[in-house]
Image (cartoon, rainbow, N blue to C red):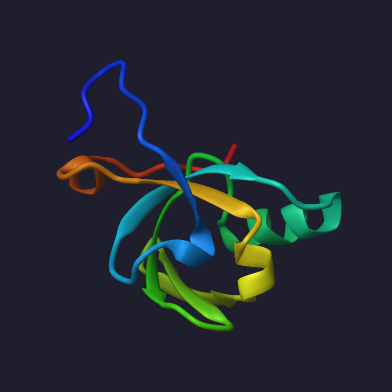
Length: 94
């Protein structure tokens, strides 16, 4: 378990195990794809869960499910949530 001052390693969204909560930490795409992801709710600071791996990946964000391509998901880095994190807060796009 990570403590304050310790960083949790980032993983690509397409490598996140199903049913695991994570927070988006970086998006490395062109402006058009970044805007598209942000419109869908996939942006830095947003909490999400991978429902189903594959192509497309199925994500759960704020209770809604959406699909994104595995190729696009490879460009999103997430940090796996620590136990209890997701029950206490909602994160928003800037």
